[in-house]
Length: 133
Image (cartoon, rainbow, N blue to C red):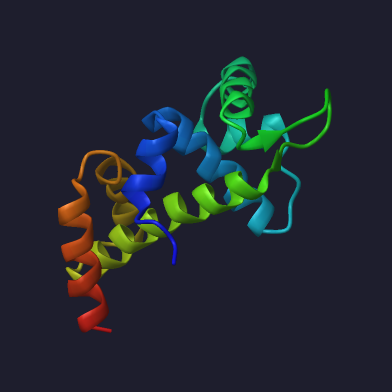
């Protein structure tokens, strides 16, 4: 059984910023595109040197690999953590949309909320959302 999201992320001591970069890499790869530094930068509205620095940190955590001038790849551990981070974001987005929030605002707010809500709150939102499918 998978560990709860908060435990996995807490174990590897990821920052909010690292989660955002990892999630962006995951989303690009999941969409069938290579995760190039410039694409991650565009997705997160940051400069390419910021992505390079973040990738270096993600490498130290064992979550990504990247050869110079090549796409960023997720390690097995990176895929697992990225999937959990992305699932948490999607849970919050679905929850907000069920409340009547527009998809664009729900996505933006989910991004903000995913980093500050407690594990208990996330679990209650998950239960609430699953009961009202």
